[in-house]
Length: 608
Ligand code: GCB
Image (cartoon, rainbow, N blue to C red; front, side, top):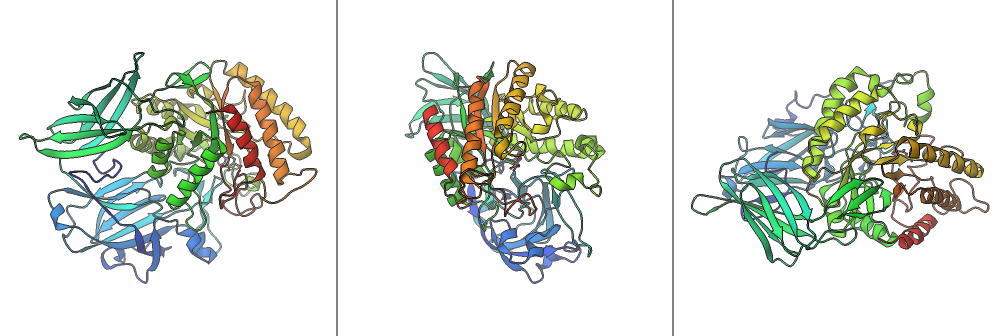
């Protein structure tokens, strides 16, 4: 990791210059931009494009909104001359799904994966005190080796298509902030912490600081009021906190940890600070323990999705979503189905939410999300398992490991993160999934100093008895739709029985692990009221939820429920989706459906 990947902070030694705003933009369907010198000479006829945002919903023509292939962004950035002695980076919080960066016509780096940050060093090409041309070539095509996974395709005239194997719109672009960073040449490049809470009310914060130089490191810990509570010397050490104020569920408390690299004469070479929370997480028997106490997760699978911005970072919507989750009595969410922005996690840290942090390994079931296509003879994947594909066993696992590494490095110090989800709804009933799971779980177990639980979310077609991979997970996370995709409407009583039968089976198959429902939900068109209820009406969503909750409450092993979804969200178009997925407790413009009041009553009864 380098110093620019830490969350950007202005400190005594570090500088940050925002680069958000209107950039130039242009599609490159033939992939000729690099050859034709766009990086050096500027984009021909660029249109204005805001950063951060997804480009898709800003266009009014379909070809642009659904565009698949290469596309370019450009801007100018003036690098202050007083930063000459620093390492200079462009930090992209997210470039979806892959990007190559050019500065003043010179290629300076590239990155695969659309939801984790990367930084490119520009010292060799930067001109001081004058504009530097920044061009970024992105690409949003999908394949069996992309996270999220999908396929390609083309219209009769050769126009490329992206074929998602997932149920959310394939939004793309510079979807999160871009910044110019100045970092000392000798710098903190990363850090990690682990915690021990003692019976006498004290706690130890064990830290490990990573640097790229030889000078000594000092660590300090300040409480929320700014008072120094502990200090230690060395790149590795323990900060002892006599009266530790713990970070707790919906009762967050944040300390400020500060690292200083000290020069020979006592000079400050680098200083970096961050917010941390003292808390422990472990799985014990059928419980998830935070600070040694069992927790029950209440909340949602979410999406980063909003009107006009698409998946573009939208601080107002992040704020609104947290207000909705607090109002309804939630205490947790999953970052379905990709790493969320650092702003989202920092909010969770401050508000005391428990986060299941998911990487973008979604769509690992070739025929799942294209619905009828799955039964179509023309679908090349119809009879082939995702994990049987040689590309998956070779390239995909390498890309996946890198994505997991980047996710853990970015998020390991967030107190809100209590569990990692390595995949959403993979084809875990397939024999070929087993070696893949063994490798990715084995790798992930080496990465987190806090040893937080690992999981994946299991789908209905890999029900109890069929799933071959649950042994790798510490917590069994189930996405279940009894009463929606199977036995919906008037058949709800049958759905209930099938659901209970499956749960009884799970109790035998996994007698000693906690269960969390990471999805359950029913599409509901806000404002549709029916007596008696029918599917899609607000009444049916409530009846459906009541049935799910009744079944959850029958099993002590169930320690969490995250309803699908917090809000309605955009998907690709198709016969199964009416302008998007409508399973939200709230609409896409963040207003409650009847179900939101039902959830609020239930979750307030359950307490924190
Ligand atoms: C799922 C997927 C999620 C979908 C949801 C649905 O199992 O994980 O991405 O949106 O079902 O509504 O079908």
